[in-house]
Image (cartoon, rainbow, N blue to C red; front, side, top):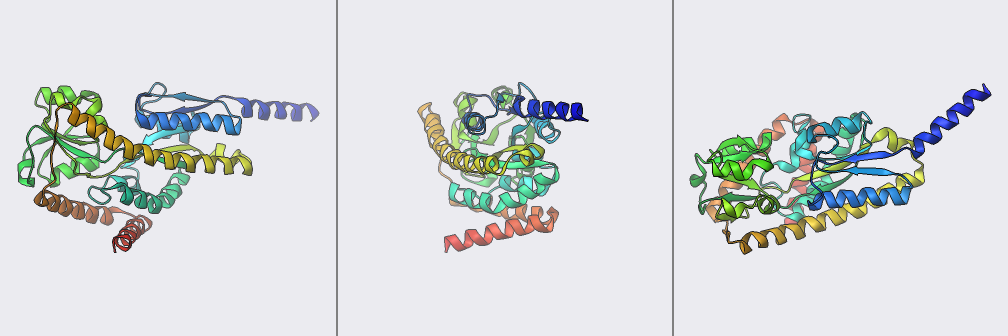
Length: 322
């Protein structure tokens, strides 16, 4: 029996000092990755852990990260929330178009959304740490768009179920294109428009194939940084409090960087010769009507708790505006 306890102590000790791993699908040149990497480094220092950071899908593909954290193959991960759209309606919420079209509304949505998201993740053995937002999503086209009728029949890049539905509502033709294929897809006529962030516009050198950027602010999507819940549960109360504090600090930093990135990247687009178009009243009205339709569809497919989440957000948004 004595030898058994000695063996057990050795196993526990080695597990506490073992390397932990964090994976993200994005390049370390991207600001969201820089935020999550800084976060993992801070955790390593504050909690006396050794967390090895893996960027650019070097350890797992984007669609594999969620399961890898869930099964404890890695202990931390970052994933685009809408990547999980088929798992539950709550993962689609921040990609619903024209529901939260500025950063104040997006932050309000996150305040309301995160508790339901935490509960859903807990069912899969995961613990939510913080959201890592992208810039607001704008419209890239080869011609100036002043009315929704001009969008009819245009082939538009689609990268999720939500963007495909949006294209259908706008009578556009959705075409699945990865971020790495954007330039070639425009050059070959595979797509004629895209709705994405100004950051993606800069990284894909959109000025080489697109003349106009219209800041329609369709939505402000987010990544989420998660950890294995079994690991989280094994930590002391003091360590958990440190994780909470660090996560809150990086949540605030992530919002700041997303807003800064929106301004900086939009400026870069115009500096490279792109025309910054104005969202006309007709275009705004058409987009808002589509947003309401898609929200109605989402509510019909959502669970009761998910429905309550959106309702609470809309009520809070209305209260703030008044």
